[in-house]
Image (cartoon, rainbow, N blue to C red; front, side, top):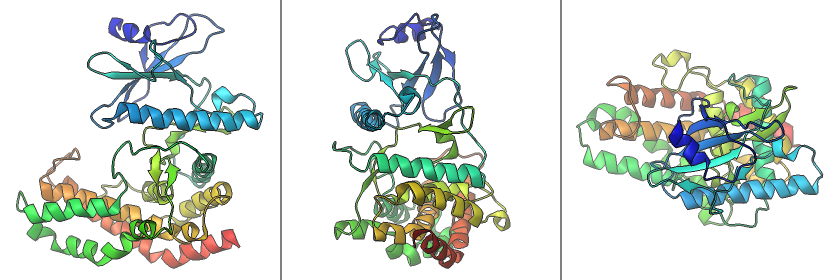
Length: 361
């Protein structure tokens, strides 16, 4: 732990830092809890940034700083109590940068929010809370004056994902294209519809917003009374269509089985989860959404299974070079599962439209 303690020493902390301890089981960044010896000093979280995924650390930290400072100013203007528990607070390094580079790795530190909790289970209650939290998060940032960049370029760009698929099909590096013609046809028949967001944006009809782009129930903190405190894991906060936060949650949250479920009969689209999330989201985001954005929310629910379908199939055709696989057919199973989910969502399109209309009249 001596090397971690040395990293900690480069940040402007209050109090005497104790030995860092592993915190959580994050898939992207490594996190450590840093307690302080003094009772009147805050505790901290030290994180090693995954530089392989987030290659522009200056941009990453610029985005997060702009977002957290903007939210903090709004909370201060509203005289919100306990602000340090309602927005993440990042600690400057000794050179006043938002991170410390040790020669090999990039590190950052934030204040630890004590007595806070996350939920893992997707239920109607947790889904409604997620809709409320992420809709409110977007609303808080609707008037953000600074320009943010894409921490993962083209992350939710459907045209880009289809271009990647086209290139994989043309190359066919391991000879798998012939065996997935049915899946490629399913993708092709929906290509124009699924790219309408990019087309509408070019026509000036659909804006990009500041979105979280990783809307999961465990990316919110709650207090001991189960009140929402704040949204966390801000690495993917960037300009995108509001569909990113709406559709991405439903892709995993409204499907009762994992995204790689081999038994296609078990895959479904839970309308109760959809309704709960949509109710919360519209309640907190309606103030800034345009009529077109609201009209296209069912499209968002279809877009993300389609997008992940395309990404899994691209990796299968390329020979499993991007996603980790647990068995040889894993990416093909994932592709068929996302195709099945897409079919389930499409079957509920009219019902989704009716429900959204009932919430906006």
